[in-house]
Amino acid sequence: MLVVPTATAAPPTQGGGQDYIVVADDWLSKLADKFLGDIFAYPAITYWTNQKHAEDESYAKITDSNLIEVGWKIYIPSPEEAQAYFSGQVAKVGATGGETVKIGALAPLSAPGSVTGGQAMKAAFEIAVEEINAAGGVLGKPVELVLVDTEGLPERGTAAMERLINQEKVVGVVGEYHSAVGLTAKEVAHANGIPTIFAETWNDNITAVQYPEVFRIAPVSSEVAAVDAKFIQSLGVQNVVIMTENTGYGIPAAEATTERLADLGISATTFSADIGTQDFSGIIERIKAANPELILVLLTGETSYNFEQQAAEAGIGPQDVPMICNQVADDSESFWKNVPDGNLCFYRRIGLPRALYTPETTAFVEKYTAKTGKASAESYAMEAYDSLKLMAQAINEAGSTDPQAIISALEHISYNGALGNITFPYGTHNPIPEGMDAKWWHQF
Image 1: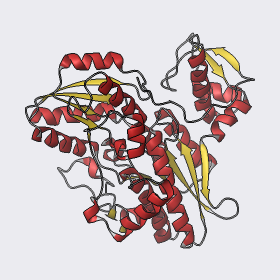
Image 2: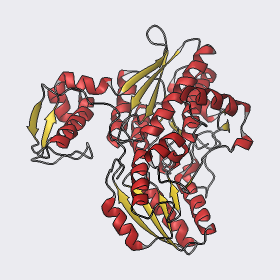
Image 3: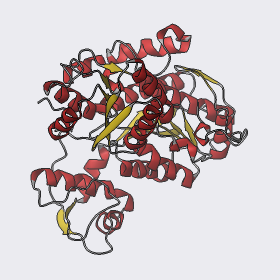
Image 4: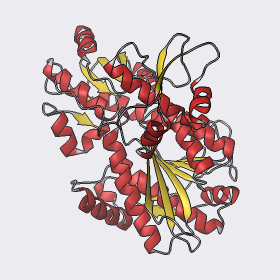
């Protein structure tokens, strides 16, 4: 069984912290304030407790930082351990020090998030920063990009946004890959009035809540479900298995796809697993018993690689049963390294087809492939690049770093980038017409 590692680097050395038993009225932010002097340091408690759990199951495994139970044994890191954790979560790109304009960015750079997607976004951000600063920056000042690793976890989305806004004092935020992170991050953006452009978060509710601060240039999940259903119908199958993840992306995406398939007379059975799952053997046996004619994989990142390869080893891989693999299959080198038996899988390629590349698309792809050694640029790389260039253009057009001025500029913007011409037809300046779905608010 081939398993993709769940960490990209060795964790910081442990030592100096203390064990703690959860009592009534405890919550992690309260404990972070008590022991570390910072309510926003609670992700470090989650991280270090889970590191301890991996070595000793007497420690709790925290899957949601908002939910801890009385009697759990957790680990409170020392201030040094907490700092070591956070220093590995933040990278600064472009100009640092002096007079700069700070823009925040989110991406999953470590497990259980999609590291493949996060690294692609990071490379795209770096290209965008170089271009922006080479062209004079924004408002005559160089851009400093503060990139925070979200790990693909909802609670990290909250903590990352709070850090970017309250500590780093960014004027806007761009990026992110996982919908689960976007769903929590948008709440912080809204509460603080900070303009945010999400790059690869598909969940309909990212924009359907109609927050003035929130924009999106990624596809909408329900629309992708419709395309998936039509493609599956074209194959003439009647019995589909959906393998999804227990996240803010996976569950609603599976539900939307099931509904669309039902409209076409096709039955679907959904199986789910947590993001970061390594061993799918039990689920695979249940899938085999369902005797599917097609398997649709809605797992993201390296978790999808684990399932796809293990399914192949069990005799229900893409060479045995038609399988629509996750879009990270577009990263050819990473896919074949981790799914060597993945021949004949289908996958979605989102974004402009090569025949419709604009000069801006071609220029970005040339820089991206030269930088990464890849054969092409993934959609999420293009989205990351465009999200940052969009924010920079909006700040320049606003003539100010005032959040409301930037939001107004974004609502009226016409930007030409890797994805083509980007505008946001519906928003405060042009409300969504009666009868139109709310998801089209601030949606490219």
